Amino acid sequence: MSQSNLKAKMVVDKAFRIAEVDKRIYGSFIEHLGRAVYGGIYDPSHASADESGFRNDVKQLIQELQVPIIRYPGGNFVSGYNWEDGVGPVESRPKRLELAWKTVEPNEVGTNEFMKWAKEAGSEVMMAVNLGTRGIDAARNLIEYCNHPGNSYYSDLRKQHGASDPYNIKTWCLGNEMDGPWQIGHKTADEYGRLALETAKAMRQVDSSIELVACGSSNTGMPTFPEWEATTLDHTYEAVDYISLHQYYGNPTNNTADYLARSMDMDHFIHTVISTCDYIKAKKRSKKTMNLSFDEWNVWYHSNEADSKMDPWSIAPPQLEDVYNFEDALLVGSMLLTFLRHADRVKMACLAQLVNVIAPIMTEDGGRVWKQTIFYPYMHTSTFGRGVSLKPVVDSPKYDASDYTDVPYLDSAVVYDEENEYLTIFALNRHLSESLDLNCDVRSFEGYQIEEHIVLENDDLKAVNTADEEKVAPHRGGQSQLDDGMLTARLAKASWNVIRLRKA
Ligand code: AHR
Image 1 (cartoon, rainbow, N blue to C red):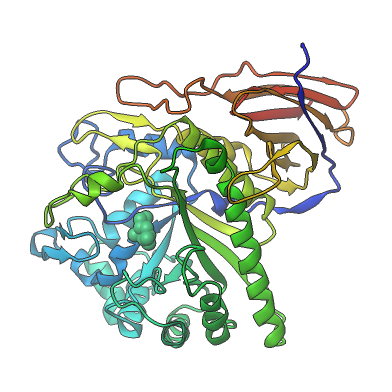
Image 2 (cartoon, rainbow, N blue to C red):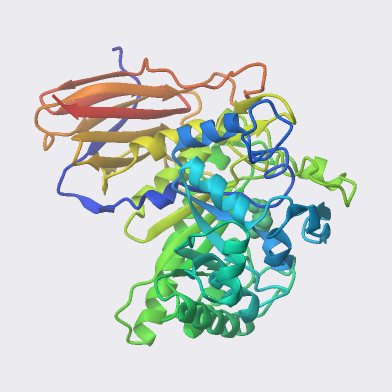
């Protein structure tokens, strides 16, 4: 290998453990929004539809991603949703005006259809309750419907609707983005904190085994951040298990170096929320440590203009259909690395969303399905990023972006799968014109060999995938070698790399 001018060093050691990765950080999200459900996962007239009307070709791609948990049914949608509209005989379900996205919700898919589908897709469900237009009563009835074994009004109703066994849904979100003025039933932090606490108590009275997520801030730019978290947790600290974080990024000014530094903002967000949780813990003299659920995150901006021109009140219009390019895949990769480095506190995260709506998977109504560029870093981390997250000690050259100074060109995370004796180094080169030579000390992994070096690269940062052509796809031709515990790898300019070592 000839030498690059850009060099970085890394030390990876078995002893530098951050925490076991909770596989639920590779979760995703399906909202009743746009063509996520209707025309996305569900299309009874499609050639690949199963007996319930769900597309098998879409299901197969979701299985390829190994999505452990899917948040449902919203999103902003949940804050106006009557869950009762979505159960019972389909022909008698009401069509409703859906106020959050200005569409018509046909309610052909509801709780029972979704639960059955999610099981087939290999995913658990993270169910959200409506704390916008509704509250304690609807939430306690829904959990009784879903989780109570039988011999009560709502559990018997579920049985009548064909689901004899309880779903035992473990994870529940107490509303969605209640800090946002756009939210139906938006609340102050005190109003929300009180309601979330009382709803949590009632839900736990129905099923004490559940885990609950309280709403944190909708993004770092909210004027109430991080006071919202402090007040909400002041009310709910002992009653909930997680606080949520949501964040989307975009590159409207077309400055890729600045754009790729956005994961620094995400890192800062996570640090601030951890500090706020720990402040409330100290204030309450609590023994409990609050964990984080980053249950909405992605790139979202490409579709804004098209959405602003959308006519209201149709069923499943193409909303939030971002077509992702190569640089988006790099930032998505970098955000995933951020979760891995915070494996001790970020226990769940949901790529928002999964199909058609700001999604890694796209469909044509009645037609083809394809993988967007962001599919790949998501799949690589979800499939290879399970085990113990190790802290890489990194010495990398840096650059200054408009919002962040000292942005390392090398972004990385490392996962050690002890059971199967794999070590996976995820490494992203943020430099847009130069390759980076990585020198990595892996001497504590005696007897390991390089299994593969996967690379996602493209000369065109704006390259996209379509149903006709997959321009952005990984290859296995990465250049790396391992001698006496020293790994050297060439990371191409602007590239996502997955270097996997395995005990020989
Ligand atoms: O994921 C799209 C929307 O983004 C969700 O409905 C909402 O929670 C967030 O603002």
